[in-house]
Image (cartoon, rainbow, N blue to C red; front, side):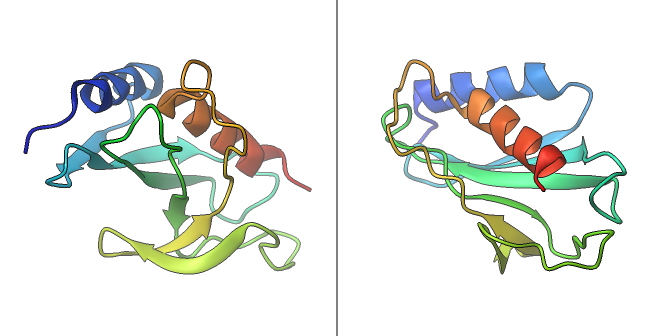
Length: 130
């Protein structure tokens, strides 16, 4: 089954927003896709690693289903040696060791909670969390 038109459009918006970071897409066979954005800058304040890939699945129900959860590199560690903390757990994504980030949109609005806006929010959360 080909990508749902709204999923394809969401992926195009993501590509435009993260350019020049490479974006890989694997169709899930249901009209959705697994997406990985490479080389997202995390800054150098919180983590030993200054960049990460970030992955997520956009299901065929998009935009009426949340883009959740997101995943980042599995070796992510904090500079202050603290645990990664709430909303983060060890996992895997698309065959890669990963840290799962659980940042669900509790009151999903398909107009304002787009895949690219959710990606931006998760990246900002990663960069600024205490």
